[in-house]
Length: 32
Image: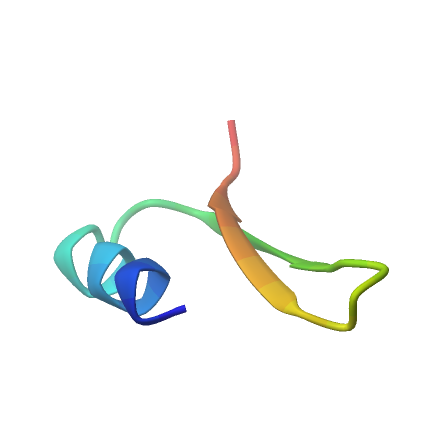
């Protein structure tokens, strides 16, 4: 998750999609 936060911080203009997985973990992925 820290890596995702770092990515988001380094790419503030990238639209992000937050996905709640079946493992109840929040994932942020680039929205293309």
